[in-house]
Length: 260
Length: 247
Image 1 (cartoon, rainbow over the protein chains, first blue to last red):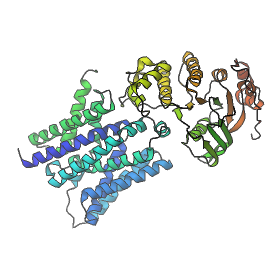
Image 2 (image 1 turned 90 degrees about the vertical axis):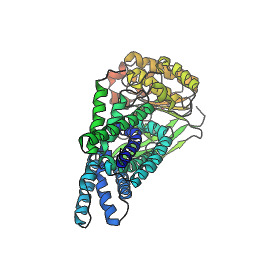
Image 3 (image 1 turned 90 degrees about the horizontal axis):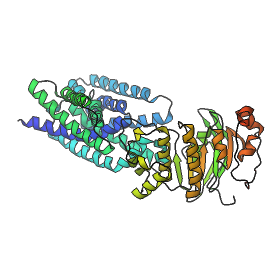
Image 4 (image 1 turned 180 degrees about the vertical axis):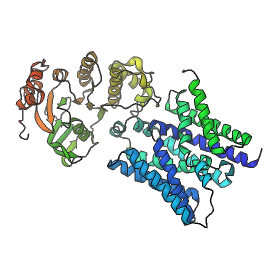
């Protein structure tokens, strides 16, 4: 087996492990569209990365953080319905990124790779990003686990019981921005949300506690990555969409199984 | 009634989206007192609870909370997602540092001991209210704040929950502030009724409030006549009904 394939598998599994618990929160808290918005804003992050000559992942994380903050405050003022605010941010930042990139005609870049992922071109530095960023995110998520569960169930109740709601929410959104940036390599900005929600939705059926659902989602994600990469190698299909399809296949098989 | 108040809110003014919701509202809750907020829809009952809970800052006015105040809060609704797998036990453990013994004792108290391992989604309306009440009690509160505790519960269950509340006050030495729509049940188990319609229309013990003209106007004489009032505390001091001057 080739080196690039091993790197792809390693990076993919790293991302899937982190995506499981975060994806569970995305499903519980109905943040799918928020994940989408972060992913779309990545195009602006990439453009900023080229423009400022900084690491592209760093650019994506920075823009994602700004978008998350903007959203947090837009929602608190409640002038607009949440999904409307998301739709505006999402598509405005994607379009701005595309327009900025069009101005930079000396920059060569692989648009399809950003849209649908380029896991087979994953580099050692990407792996480093995935494992360090993903590891930090997981540790922080474990620290925030209990307050996040309380907030997910009932925000006001959590607040009355003394949970630092604002701080917890902000840290969680910031971690989401980081993870979306890590996921881009794998499946591209169009497909990021699928990696959050499909494994988590598959895991729901088999689990009775939040923790087992998060772990099962990680495991399902790893299987999907392995299956997708194998399919991609066997039939020469694009890797990102193959991973998403293999996750979908697992979801379909699981929904055919009888309830426990 | 001379012990210092647990919570005292004075001259509360609050507008939401440019509309006045609370005007010049005063509210004092003393230890072991059961206070019920009644009033029509949109009268600001839930908003006033949120001010007491510290979830909403008033535009004007002050809220003083006693040192050592421990609030147990039972929210009106709990939007529970089917995608969230959680058992009653786990849900109750989220209340804070509680031991399994405390948990079983509180469940016993609210009459829901058998539900410990049930998934939260499998509960009926009445069972769910009991679990929410148990969670509030786990905080060992000296003030319980309940927002429509019998919403979505059948009549039989409502009677039981109100009985439970009276017992809880005695067992836990806790004051109770609640919002309710059901005049009949409220009147039977309340020390003091506050009739709210953005301002305080009248306040006093259940009997005196039902004779207040503004109360009659809000709820209709027919509804009030059908009220069976059980005075549970004959020695209770009759308070003066303040007549609202703003209509």
